Image (cartoon, rainbow, N blue to C red; front, side):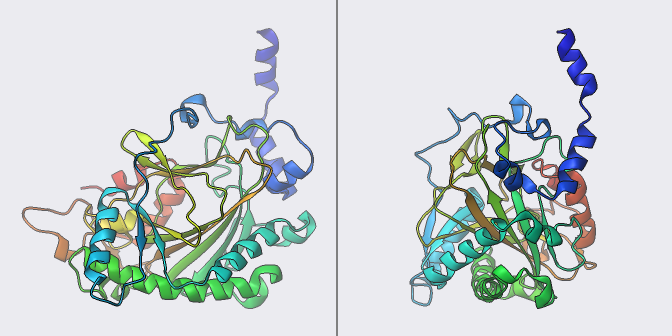
Length: 370
């Protein structure tokens, strides 16, 4: 007992975090160093860790929606499926979305290749600010979270003003440009379908510049020697309108459903779509907010990777590009019977609150409730 107390007194968490951050190794570098136990600041309290024995509800799969007949008489059926998925799950997968599988594979490979470069090559991109539009880091909330998560991230601002080509790592430069082109086209389709699912004009979200503000994160989850003590990504909801996620075959993403967690099992060639907080409410930025609660932004998380094979997932977040406009529930979705659930705010205020809060669940939405 006495030794344990001495250990507590000797442990300088802030110092360890600073040393890790300054090393620019990321968790990939820790794994490459041969460590067999994770640093203490990555260990999460037991109550916040996934119960790997009882975490799924296998009889409730995340909906998979086929877009093959989108431009036929079946469009209304597809809109209904998406609307239902947004209202109940907040998550769905899409197939036959028009992006060739070869581009999906190339994009995954490009992000993996970046992360698997030598530390000294990646280090020149290691930073926590986004002044250049490109940054590589481990844990955006490293200094504010209660415990760190086992992943590294390459983050890029894609729009409205993309980074200059020279700022993007050469190893993935062409593939990122190609991915952005494809994802912007798909985003336009998804915004139309989501708008129609709310009974709005198909161009409503596009008019709000919800296609223009795009950011990409390429997350890399290397092998974790103690996956039962940490997570790949803590439970959170996304601070935007819609998120498009390209995940590899490894799995690990889970969505909150009721009191349990459902695995989002990889479907070959599919993309995962989820509702952001902005769309859930009656606001303009968060899909949950602008839909006045009609669409649901749902908590999700990623398990730590217990496999020797690394996991790669690439998310593109769509948001409005007008950061100082006032946002809130769309007027078309507010009535005496369904009053506004959220107050007005600016996108700058919303994003500032998100980063202050950290990735710890739904407290962000609660802050903007009326």
